[in-house]
Amino acid sequence: MAQRRAWAALVWAAIGVACVLGQTQQAQAQSVELGASTALHTTYVFRGVPQYVGDDNPTLQLGLDVALKHGSGFWWGEVWAATSLQQRDTNSRRGSGEEVNIALGYTWQLHPSLTWTLGGIEYLRPSNEPINYREELMTNLFWDAYEGELATVSPYVAAFGEVHRLLGVYVEVGAHTRVELGDGFVLSLLGFAGGAQYAEDTVDSNLIGGTVALTYNISAWPGLSITGHLSPSLSQENIGVSGNDFIDRHGFLWSGLVLRYTAIDAELPATRRRTLGLGFQAIR
Image (cartoon, rainbow, N blue to C red; front, side):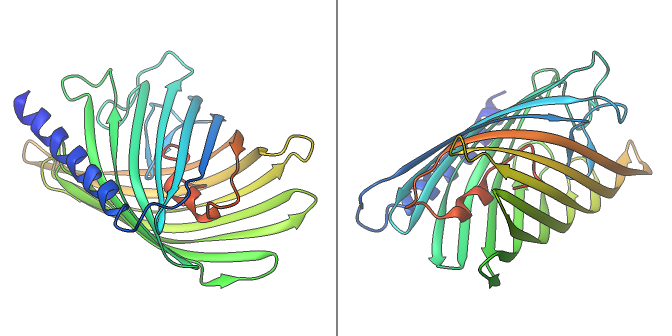
């Protein structure tokens, strides 16, 4: 237990360093953005791996997030929760029927079209005894390679290092395209590929995936939007247990609806949403 707490202290100390680095410039007039979301998905897939047993086990997900402009970028934080809506077994090796994630970090606006993020995530999964929590340090780099009047294309690279449970890293590269369709509609297209290597659990995995999403910004209520998505993914895990190796393959096509309200401050860059959306990873 003491060793676990030591790892947790190390992770949150690193997150604190990210926040301190964010204050290297003099404090400027601060602006805040708050957001809340509720989502219903046909299942819960995390990095290509199903978190529930069966592909017809729906999930309800809730999130609260905040961004605070400061210096050359902004601090951000999020609390996110998911629960299975079916009384069935979950994927105990990877998921939990109930899950709460807490994330904190800082994003630097290196250039009008380039952002760099450093932070950390705590995953709390109460039913996964004896290891019911884990931590990751995360970083990502986003580049708005093309910014037109109606469309933006943004390639990115992201890395997540797990320092407590599996002792490994997950790396992802991809590109996000956002197209303004008019009348409040926005089309989002995402394609990505990722790979993970974990030493403690003798696991490595590879995946490809994507998302097609349509968002409607409700003009009668500024800040309120509803998004529908369709998200395919293919993954393969190579797992070694007790000297035996086996391959676990997953193919999923999942969908859902997300209702979100954002108290928007125009001084905050729109790119800040790339750091959020822990559960609904496909939309970022």
